[in-house]
Length: 280
Picture 1 (cartoon, one colour):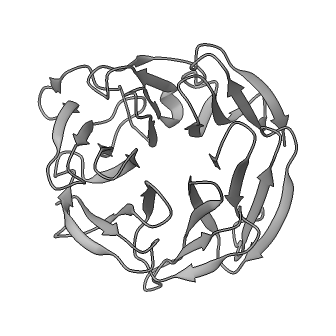
Picture 2 (cartoon, helix red, strand yellow):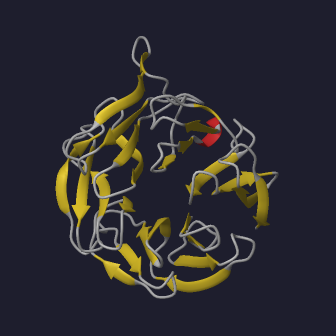
């Protein structure tokens, strides 16, 4: 799920069933109250991100040795073209400049960060991010040509998991650790990290941020990822969130599973309170 503004958004996924072979796209023009089913793509879709007025990129899922493609739409999700890409998480500052992550290096080294200057047609490696303590990228978000964040994670247990939040001011060449937790014989903490395990993350230019954590609920940060605290809409073992998206410091959306149904919730006060606007 992703949005261009408070009214216009997009959802991607796949048909119900264990053997889904296609990707489904749906769009909204009224803040998620109603959705229009769009084109069916040839592969299951797992993520979507937006930029500018009508640009969207959707990442597909397939089993190795398949090379998972990246799909791009320049008309708000109505038509799509396939791009050659190995990135599993992508974020774009505008219609041409973006970053993506993919597993790279030797086992456990972390994620390879890539950069594109042609809208995702070609990608150039920037370097490895994350690390052995938290080898997987859970969330990647750039809010400009140079400023961005990545949240790294590792295998957790129950409602706990190792994670680290990094921030860059030079397009991903150097990263500053904002908070982290590493589990070995004793937990080692930097700042006030989320409890984890982190499934995804979203950041705004202001430094406001949110992570969603599967069974552990959701947490928010107001200082660019240095300190995190429990925050709506997720509730451990009750309200499951994946993903979240904000279009401003006050207006945001969350795809929620609660009360036996998948729902779209929205906030207009920066995440303090939420209300359901659609139920599937």
